[in-house]
Image (cartoon, rainbow, N blue to C red; front, top):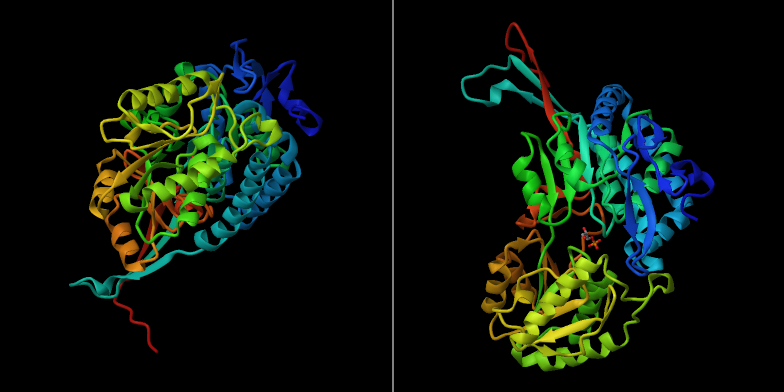
Length: 496
Ligand code: G3H
């Protein structure tokens, strides 16, 4: 159970502690933040409401710890990460349990998230050992006017303190996707988990604590965004921000100092379906892509753009599959579970009402109980409807009928977002042409959008983000190139 066994020390009475300088602590603010269970809509957990003063202390200890960590041999950093990965997997059950309780993730998916996170940490350790062990050697005589008098050695050095801010939908996996690359590259971490997801994240952090990382290297502060959010992101002690979430990321990037930013801010992933597509394959992927974790994934299929000639057949196939989705509690491993909060459910309902008023065809009856929204496919959606452009982050999927490939590409590219997209066709030439024309960070051919496997590059363009993630890209992003130039008194040419 959460907060029990090896995790007992992270709990004080009914409030989970925060982690700083290698210790679990109570905030001197004396305040806590409640985490509401999306299913029961009652308080499930409480976490510390850290103060700005505590954030300052955390930044200081993260800075000192990083200086020592950067001097720790790469193989030792990797060894500790492998240890943390094993501990994380060993304790998957209590972590998964908190994912179920605080973000209503279906039980099996919650376990998968923890196991995937352990694998990510291990892969990161291995990749780091390979790519950080390599540098470059340049000589001066390749540039006009130069003799071979300068040898330039390049290597990758850490940035310093990385501020990691993961979202509610993957509070463990999208936290370790920032923590592990940062650590292997010699950085320290200040983690600010989402409030919903904070307890799962604190358990994950404890696995790193149990692995024996040095004091102050990994820190986790919890609290109200209104109190410590801007204070953290604008803190002069932060050397890089890795953020995943909504459009708060746009505000963060405007306020942050002159530091590298890695931002992933959501998407409106389009699924373009051509006449020759295998409609059973498409329907299966629309269900998986549109309704997994109740549509609360940045890479969810968020609009289907289907050629009119096959639209009726596709709608029938999707309807049949929607009817088979189980709806209910995450503990029962239902396919569709309550969305994360009441305000999120209200937002989704607003999009549905707008679509209704403007004449969309409802393939199922709209149904909501508390935060639980039944899966809904909206046919004949038109560009004047909000759902055609906005991200519901819920189990409601719009379908737009198109009459040409150009129309589909135009709709996809008119979006402010550009995370992923997908195209279904048996014609590889058309698939490549469409993929090239889509203004998105990734295009999947004949499969739904997805971030993983976690070593693949993952990036958005436009309002979907800055920079590229995926294990290798994240390690590189969290380093800086350093060069040392050896100047020779006279030209020296190596002989064969
Ligand atoms: O919600 C955003 C995640 O990066 C999506 O990850 O494709 O593995 O569900 P996923």
